[in-house]
Length: 85
Ligand code: SF4
Ligand code: SF4
Image (cartoon, rainbow, N blue to C red; front, side):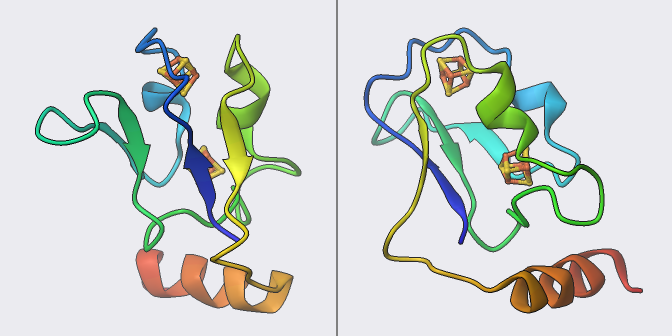
C-alpha cells in the first residue's frame, strides 16, 4: 500500500529529499503539510528494503494507508511503470 502522512506532520522537510520516486511534496493549498502522491509511492520497492520516509520521520507520522492496499507485485509493477522498466 502507499504510505500517507498524517496531520501530525511538523513540516521538518526531512522526508521529501529522501524519496527515490519524488512522491513527497508540500501541500500549500489544503493540508499545509507534506503529502505523499500514492501514484508515485512504491513503499520504496525498487530501491530500499523498507520505506525510507517512515524511517527518517522524527515523529512517526507516516503510516500505511489502509485505503490503498497493494501487494508487493503491484508495487513492483508501479515501480516499473514509473521508471519505464
Ligand atoms: Fe517515497 Fe518510499 Fe516514502 Fe513511498 S515509502 S513516499 S516511495 S520514500
Ligand atoms: Fe512531516 Fe515527518 Fe516528513 Fe518531517 S519527516 S516533513 S514530520 S512527514
